[in-house]
Image (cartoon, rainbow, N blue to C red; front, top):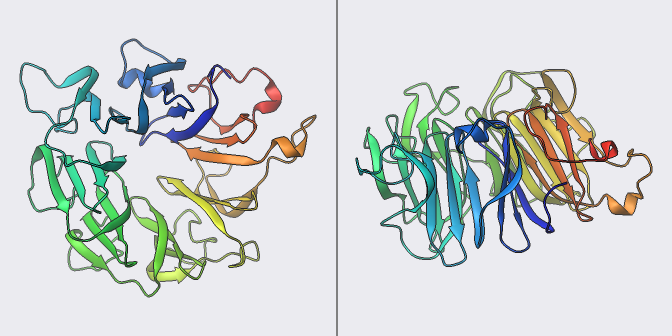
Length: 356
């Protein structure tokens, strides 16, 4: 792998086959085929340092948010819908370097992007958002392009949130889930398919979750996995029903039980995954050739332990990330494994045994 320092964190882009990583010196590395939509030239790109002093990153198909060590949030890439937080004709609609985002509160702790929207969370649990908002997908009723951050969900004490192209899901510290944007699958009721600050009926207390355009997989405080939404690719754990309109226990088919402790939940579009604290990886949903030739997978455990000539003690999982066509696993020993289509995502793996 061409990244010179130990990796602390990896992430996949929203809607593209671009990958990013932050190393232990807080350098931000980027690579992949669709990085050409963000950077000069045609790509695909081998890993290189795009920025230093970086604490957090969020990458979409056309723009990048970056939080630095000094608390400054910056953006580069397309700004045609205000997703970089500026409305200055002199700057144009495409930024080839990072510009600070104005009018943000202090103490930002988390970044998130949709394809053409941007979100930040501060220590007080307030979400600020800007960009494309023609269907309330930023979480407030102002159907237009938003060129500067506005408080979309204040006073809800937000613990966690996830966005897709057309909506945002947020989790409050008391276990409530709120929704804004287009309900494309009509899973929250037939009366309207776009909603703002909609309180999702939850019959479980939720501690963590991952949401996509049409569904959500969540972990309860009793360590159970529950599912809500469209199930056309096995996201629920099997293909027995197309839609769950209320939170329902995941159909684990004997693979999952509540004695397992989840370390991290991940996802991209309609593929969900989770890593347990005892180093087991599970996936379900829309596969897109990331894990097997089939287009859909029911709940599946994926292991690294079959790698030849590698000591299993070197395969303890540190992080996992998913993008449009590929899935990456970083081990504690700094091996980076990939599965799926990596033809446009050259990561300089070198040793072919490191290709998952």
